[in-house]
Figure 1: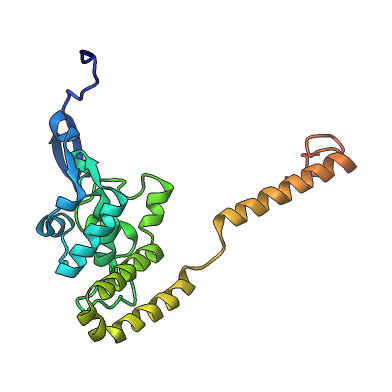
Figure 2: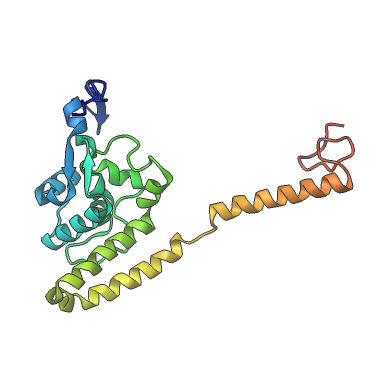
Amino acid sequence: MKKKSPHKYKLTEDRIFSRGGRIFKESAEERERVYKTKKMLHKDLEKHFNVKLTNEEYVVIKDFAFNDHEKIVGDENKFYPFDKYVLSIKQWGTKSGACRKRAKYFPDDGLFRSFGAPSGFGLETTGRIFDFNFGNMEEIYISIQEEIDNRYPKLEKKREAIREKNKQTLKENKKSYSGPDPDLIIGLVVFVFLTWLIFGVIFGGSDLSPGGPKFFGHDGG
C-alpha cells in the first residue's frame, strides 16, 4: 500500500485582510474550503452584492457562472464566478429587464464600493479589467435578459418591446465606447520609430551617432 507523504502541503496559518474598510480574519480551513457553483443560494448573492435579483435572473446567472467555474476554493473566492454577471445587473439593470440608458455607477469603482469590495477588486488582470468596463457589462446584462427570454416563452412575448429597446441602447452606446485602439496606437508608434531608426542608420547613422538625424531634438550643440 502506498503511504501518503507526511510533507503534503497544507495551509496552516490564518490570514488577515481588509474589505470595505473593515478587517477580516480567514482561517486556513476557510481558505481550503471548496464551494460548488450550483449550490449558491439566491439570498446569498443578493446579500453579498447588495442587489435584488428576479428568480429568472438568478437561474440564468447561476448557469452562466457554472459554465465558467464548476467550483471554487476559499471563502474569499466563493462569489468570484458570479461577480461580473450580478454586477452587470446592478450597473445596467431595471425591474422591467430594460437596459439603462446610462450606467448607474460612474466611475467603475463606485460600483465596487456599493457592496464593499476589497481594494483592487476587478483590477487583478487585464482580463478582469475588461470584464468590468461599461461596454462589456452592458453586453453581459443584455445577454442575461436574452437568455431569460429564450427560457421563459411567456415572458418573451411580454418583453418584445424591451428586447428591441435593449438592442437599440447597446447600439447607441457602442458608438461612445468605440475609439482608437490603444494597442494599435502603440504599434504605430513603434513602427514609426523603428522605420526612422533603420533609415537613420542606412543614410546618416543613428541618433546616437555624431552625424545622425536628431529624432529626440537638438544634440545640445
